[in-house]
Image (tube, rainbow, N blue to C red; front, side, top):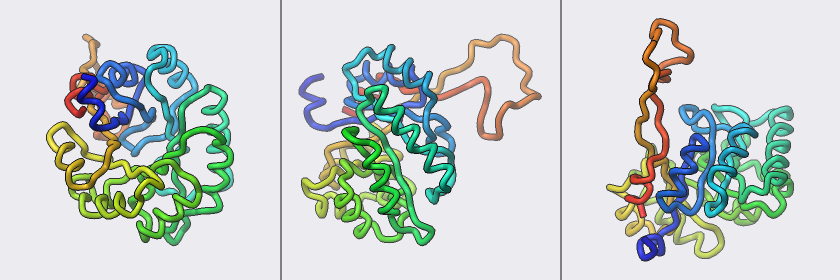
Length: 248
């Protein structure tokens, strides 16, 4: 396993503390812990973060997404305040880093807000998440992220998945050089990660590596749904250590 992990760094999009445990067991270097995965990820609860720390017991870096809601990346003053409090929480808990993103109404990086969030993060590692994939000009945005001191940018190459976005990701990796890490994500799987790596030159990858887990409930009233479709109460996806290892 040591020889395999030397080739690439894997970050797992983890939807629970148990997914963090599976990510560590599979050999991932880092997790991005999120809630509300069907919405693209929102900030996880304090309890979920603490549980993830306790169950993993170190040995894997834990980042959390700083995103107060689903939808776009144009934030109100109240939402910015929530983001700053969540960044403060991440620092107080001794996490490795945060993943965040913010845009102007015109689709550019909100550099003023990004600088404010980056200052609040202090020594935490900062990843600019897939808000990058809906920005107006990815090459201008890349330089702005570098100027703001972000450590990495997560991107599908502004396509529906990273495999489709290979051409742009390759250009971004080349332009970034050693100034920022360009990390392909969205649709990265054991069957395509080698191609994405070879054709883009990327060395860090973001994947969920999840399998379906079925409820152990024997009594089920399926007439009363708790969420909107396609959310289902009696099945859920969680990270699978075997899928993590298969990506390394």
